[in-house]
Image (cartoon, rainbow, N blue to C red; front, side):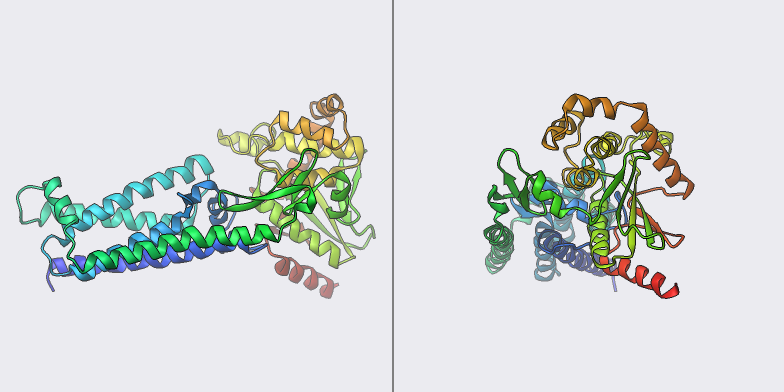
Length: 425
């Protein structure tokens, strides 16, 4: 087998792998947007998270999931390689394909790294395939190309010199994938919107590939509903309590022999919200379980571990933690504030937090004074110290039965842990 055939096989196999990964990425996109409580297997923490990337507006290009564009590109390359396998110019033209793929990969890699501060393992797999194949093709063109000069005009002419029967096939592939992605995702979202009333206090809109309730003034969104403070009371943790003397938040059982879950959470962490929703279900179904919530903001402004790295991470997490404890201190509304802050994790600036205090019926000046007080800062710092004692490095994390668990565990996983502890007792 000559070198050209070996290179062809390597590129073809890598392209097939890229196609398979892109199909799986599209499946993850769909589940993240339409399957409630779904957590993909590639979600490990706040940084290594496929869902964080899928939830962003950058996961869509011209209203179509980026994964669909990946499927389209790899399919076209596969067909092109099959139709033109024996053509002398095949590898040169593939260089143009993969040059385009590599530029796009670099763009989305930087978006994830710099803007989203997240790593999507499957996305990165396609990026490395694209860069690797492009590098291989460049080396091939330099070392083994028979012609003396590489003329971009000649290559572009060859690139578009498809035979008559290839053009309609490529066109059909493009139309099918683009139209499917452009119609199916928005249609699905519109269908969900038709079934979403937003409690009559707002309207459902499709924003960046997700459905959200855009609420009337004086209402806010939670679980795709528009709520005011009174309706939120029915949607918080069962038996939620806040000990204002000790700045301690608990929920669930008040019995001394209750199984205690000690949670360490951060309001800017999307996985923390998912875990807390699952913990809430546990409290609802297991009356002998108690939750103790500790503030563990990954913010260099109050967390020594983050400050020691010299990096900035969750810039508003400390103030959000202060707000929640002050809401508990001033109005015994810690758990209501907890749920609201998690759901609005992208709007936790100081100005936003102070505007929320009015909605909670708390005087803005009193809230500001409380948030700047040494007492609340010391209370949050004591929570952080406790987390450091347990060697917690990221959120979410919780301790139950003396064991440390990290990540957004599912309800079934937590249920299994609780059941095992109950049986051992």
